[in-house]
View: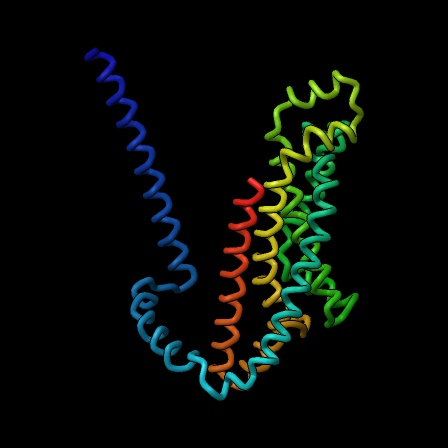
Length: 267
């Protein structure tokens, strides 16, 4: 018993030393990064009250800014529709593509690796970079924003769907195949019922993410709520900018609540 206790203390001591070394390395990296970028944590913390005071003073919506609410809601609706359209298209393509990328359902190892590489390519290029690239081909319009969001949605959702499908036990697949079920019957009876709740949840999450991203993309493509925000910002109409921020927050919170309710209904 005493030997086992000493052994446990020795393992715990080595673990604590390892954690301490990792913390020291991270602190050293932070310090070197601060020196390289001339960032001062003390100055940043002391500027927080001033920044909060400025936001309270300038970003609070006023009665005058409320007159712009119809234009804001119209642009916000445009942004929501753009995000939903891109996400749904991305989810449909990602669902079929993930069947090739998942080890459980892929017909060959080559297709599995190829699907994962393609999804990683679309996922790891930032949406801002996609927007800049597509601007040269499509110009500043809604199509550019939708394609950008589609690319990022496709990459992210393919990864999520692959993980969801791989979590399905291979025993279920083998049992269905042993009964003579073909590939499509196996998918319909064994895979689809198991993954549909996670697919819906991840798709809803992607809609929320795309609405936030569409705001920044709209600044570049001159569409949606992002473009309206940039217009009022350049006019130094900060009260209306604050109203736009509030409207975006309300939409995002509402979507989170709706997503939670849908998850409870289907899980």
